[in-house]
Length: 392
Image (cartoon, rainbow, N blue to C red; front, side, top):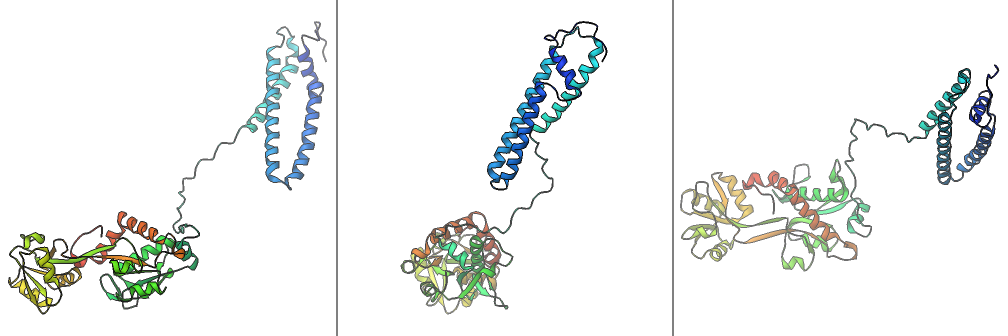
């Protein structure tokens, strides 16, 4: 080493002397402490590696704490070196600059690398490829609910009519079709979730209007959607939902008729009815100024309307839909003379039917609100009624 031309004060230049010694090897108190810390950290790392196999959750936390301590040591070391750099004696001979600056630059570079490792990793950029949303999630219900019981069974039994188009009928393959079966399929989706073939979770039970209630009380069906009238008599035996369809006796007039729009417009008008149907009494109750003409068949009433012998035809709505098909130059008007409400029936509420009736009502209200009901009406009923409806 070249001779120093001036005296070196061991107190004023202690940082310089330590750094010069540190260049060839880790010498001095600072290097000794570092080795001690490294040895202790190494032993603790060995213990943690063994313990991690036994208790990974707790060891993970301990590893995080050690990493934080390491970062704190690196930060303190960077502060010490930075402080030493600021306190260097400006009068130090330039010949010692290479010995003083080189270790300092290397140490600072190492500190920058260590601090970078301690920084939290940035989150990766989100993928530009959209992840498809699940399409067949099964709804969740309380374990004690009847909906959960149906899920456990893997099927729902629905009573339906065989020969009542457009409400319900069987196509040539035997599959149920019409407004009510499709409403039943929507109910099955609400319980089991969307499926490629929703009929796979439906067991169809053939009923007619005289056996619909018995199918529920004898536990043959879970629900009946079969033009079941919402009457006090039915409600005394089974539970009934809010109405899913409201119909009744209405008036058919010629398409060019502009005066008759509702029951009040039947004053001094003649309404044709089928003998024995009882509609004539209902017309009289709705408007006692109206006249009625009873004929043997509704086909005869259509002929009388076409010839101008009567002003209107009174019948239940389903019958009038059929007459519209016979004479497209007619239309249905007015409110029902007598109203009939169809409801979904289920077994009386008991311990094994918990929450089922409220669920059915909530589901039905949702089907009306989201347009499902209106879509089914447009598909099955509107081609016959020539009307647009979005609610029962």
